[in-house]
Length: 328
Ligand SMILES: [Zn+2]
Image (cartoon, rainbow, N blue to C red; front, side, top):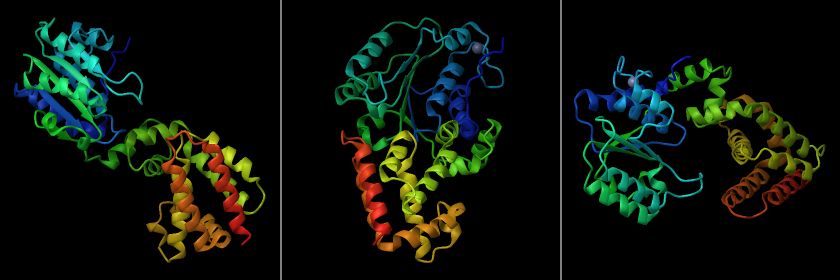
């Protein structure tokens, strides 16, 4: 049976070296904070590092995968490792969870390796939870390292930040990210990375969902709508079905690109430089004023994205508006 390998994404190797340097110098801080955008693999990095800390016989600065600690860690049964996250993505980390951790930290460790705690995301704590964590940070337990992961540093109290060693992950090597995505089997790594704002794991996720194909097909549908060959209600339904993909961003980027192109921008300045032929159709059918109106409509839909407003209905209004502009 192959030993499970820790995931250290290639674009994070420099940060891995930075983390493991603490161990090589025997200076593991009591609290670390990994700061970076979602989709970079920070949780995987924190877990791999925790595994490295508890491993009894690391090989080449990596966890061995086969010692007693690694086996327990990989089976998610290592008694001195805690991974705290909200029950579901939209939820927050509540004070009870922090209290539970504090209580566990008061006990002695099962092994003589440092105890590891990951909080993911730390900015997802309620303020009572953050206050409770602050006490733990002020009186660090012996032989324990907390790793706070945050995507929004500004949302964390300064008192917490000041007690952590900050590691800012903001230098993602696109060549490495693209090579990784290609190795995973993605043949359009460059396009997917660009569609995902150069965030590698988002690009991976979009590729898994065949997003490029979906985008191209939606653009065809949008053009059909403008030519009066597709019913606005059906177009809205197609947008709605693609929920989970950045449909609003696509529609907006086609229109803003067309506006820029109409104003004389060069192809290479556009997000969708591969779609210039289609953008010209948008300009011809909608004209500058119509396209600006539609961009405003889309930003209104985007602002209401997380509310209870019926999104399908909003797409219907957008589709009807788009078609009616072509007749003006
Ligand atoms: Zn090991």
